[in-house]
Length: 248
Length: 320
Ligand SMILES: Cc1cc2nc3c(=O)[nH]c(=O)nc-3n(C[C@H](O)[C@H](O)[C@H](O)COP(=O)(O)OP(=O)(O)OC[C@H]3O[C@@H](n4cnc5c(N)ncnc54)[C@H](O)[C@@H]3O)c2cc1C
Ligand SMILES: Nc1ncnc2c1ncn2[C@@H]1O[C@H](COP(=O)(O)O)[C@@H](O)[C@H]1O
Image 1: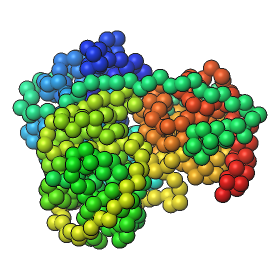
Image 2 (image 1 turned 60 degrees about the vertical axis):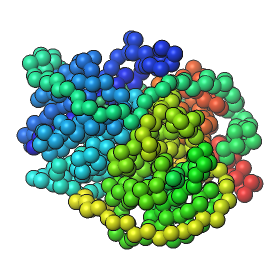
Image 3 (image 1 turned 90 degrees about the horizontal axis):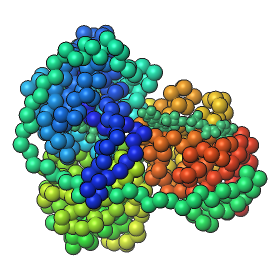
């Protein structure tokens, strides 16, 4: 079984979000970048397939050289090799096209991605990839098992869960539940040493004109102060919610 | 030319997000000086769409579409968009919507913007405002392609009444093959889901243990709300994962979010910030959540919540 895990390189969840150059660019100054949290669940599930079912695990990122430490971290967690498609990841459609090229030539059985990147929250790459390649696709995946050529998948739906079966190859948009939080792995010293020697291949991007362009950013307006209500005067809270906020 | 909305339904009824997408579609159609076409699948009574500006309804009825498979539905939208010469296609942010909208974009070779929260600020270049960085910022995105796909964020545009007399046309699409099969569906009935809810009541580690969630559920029931929780609460197994909200859980964009015993960590706030009104109950007056909230009560949830439930019951019965 060959698994490809798509890794998005995103600002750590505690990062201060600021913009520069007239609010047109994200200010990465002092920001720590990490593996997108949803992709960590996918990667950990991939490690399980590697250890229990002998899968090989490749990680991939579409990005410029600054993303390499993130790929190395994935190698340190246990992936076998890494691919970086050398291009700025501007638009989700562009990223999906680049990934599709690699997948076409790679013969992967399962492509694991996260349900969204926590930076632009696009939530578009895995399903676009599936549409480009006409592969089976399950989003919001909270459980995945594979036997021979078929997979059993749990998908979260509004108000419950669906169990599906699908043939490989298969693309997954994953989230917590794919593995438990406590099973997520942090790279250890040995992993980090080994990662240095694992192959990281850089491939050039194929031409594809971006379909969207980020024009500018804006921060939410500062909110007014919180109105405090005395714990012994909850009637006032109800009255505020009813008459002022008009939400009950 | 036209603007096309896919109005999602469940058991033959439109979801609120579908009507919101229709309202939004009408606005975009006006901006572009064109008509609004709405596609429905397996809905017998489509009259609800008339209130929100629909000019033409394309109605698909097919029993094979009981279990909306994203790929097949995306392809039906693709067929209708081509037939109706649609320039903008609008899809809501339901679980199905976010899976199928990117596919529609690929089929139509269209630029796609998700999490859109307002009518286009400009139609040439076509520019929309989107949530980004888990609502810690907004991005103005230009869609460059001739055909555009928009994923509309929930509770962002609202319902805008605009009475019309829509014509209805039946359509029999060709259906793609899919080797994905549904083995079983496990759905709690009669419970409001976080994604559908107008009000969400959420509990954090301050509530001490799973045995104390009775009052959270009762408060939710009085308000017709969904229940949610902070990440540690679901990690500890006090509540199911599906209730975990925040940056790495479900996003909440309800009208009212009530946080009980939640400190207001940056990752929690990132996922709930786009709720319109936030109420916090916390023993610690210094809890960061008070800075992000609209109304705050410094107090012990175990005392405040039962009292609040009693008072709300009285309020509801006198306002019924
Ligand atoms: C990568 C990453 C992603 C994360 N993603 C998320 C996410 O998506 N969602 C999320 O929620 N968290 C997330 N977190 C965790 C987040 O940082 C916080 O740890 C978490 O939100 C804290 O949960 P809490 O407020 O329930 O608990 P605590 O921080 O322990 O707060 C409990 C609060 O309850 C109050 N309290 C105590 N007793 C009472 C009482 N009797 N009555 C009223 N109040 C009381 C306390 O004063 C305190 O403020 C993430 C963290 C990381 C590192
Ligand atoms: N630049 C990228 N390189 C590799 N994978 C990506 C990239 N961007 C997004 N992905 C994958 O697609 C998922 C969804 O991302 P997005 O569509 O950007 O919200 C992520 O969780 C990743 O698995």
